[in-house]
Image 1 (cartoon, rainbow, N blue to C red):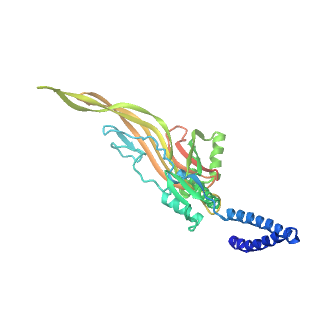
Image 2 (image 1 turned 90 degrees about the horizontal axis):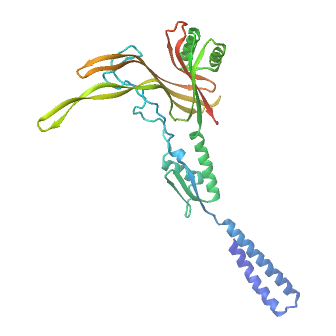
Length: 363
C-alpha cells in the first residue's frame, strides 16, 4: 500500500515541477510547492507506518525453576532399633528385633513439568505461526529463554503466572498434642472413624473449649509450613549411644596372631516423629481442600537389659514402638486425628492425642 501511494504521487510531482520551471511567478508554481510539501509529509507518514508495522523482537529470560523442580522433601530422622541384639515390642504386641524409619525408598507422588512440556506450552500460548526467525525459544538450566514480540512476551508471562499459582501454594499445619478425658477422646475417635479421619470445625471448637476450661490439656504444639506436595516433619526426642555387640578381629606379625574384640557402637533414637505431605486440591465449592498424607512414629525406652558375653557385659535397650500412617482430604477449618492412645494415669486421661489442622495460605 505504501509503495502504491508513492508510485501515484511521484509522476504528479514531476509534472508539477516542470510546470513550475516554466513560470516561477505563475500561481501554479505555488500550488506545485504546496503539493511537494504535502508529498514530503506523506513520505514521512508512510515511513512511520512502516516502522509500526514491522515486528519488534526483544529477548527475555524467565525463571521457571519452581515449575521444573519439585520442592525438596524434609525427611524426619529415623526412629529405630539399630541392632539385632536390641529387641522391641511393637504396638500390636509382637516382639523381636527390627527397625522402623521414615527415610525409606519411596517414589514421589506427582511430577514436575518436563522442559519439553513447558516449551510446548509456551509455543502454543503465543501461537504456532508466531515463531519464524528471529523468534526463538529454549529451556536452559531451569530458565526459559525467549526472543519474541511484546505481545508474545505478554502471553508467556500470563502462562507462567497461571502455572506458578498452584506450584507455589503454601499450607500451614498446626499440630497439637493433647491429654483428653475419656468421653472427649471417645467422641473424637468415633467422629474420625465416621468421616475418614476428619474432625469437623464444631468438634475442634469443642476441643479448644475443653482446653480453655481445664477439662483437657494441650501438652505441646508446633506449626509447620510446606508447599503443596512438599513433605515436612516434626521430630522431638533424644539419642543415646550404647555398645550393641562385639566383633572379633585378628592381626599380628610373623608367627604371632592376636584376636581382639572390637565394640560395635549404635545409637538409639527415642521420642516421636511426625511427617506430613499436604497437597492442595481445588474443590468446586467451599474453597480448596488439603489432602494430607501423615506418618507418625513413637519410640519409648522400656528398660535396659544386661547380657553377658565373653568380652564383658552388654547393656541393650528394650523399647516400645508405636507407628501409624493415615491420609485424609480436609476441608477448610477442619482437622485430622492422627493418633490416639490410652494411658494408665490415675485420672484416666489419654496418653496422647495428636490433631493436625491444615490451612491454605495465600489462596
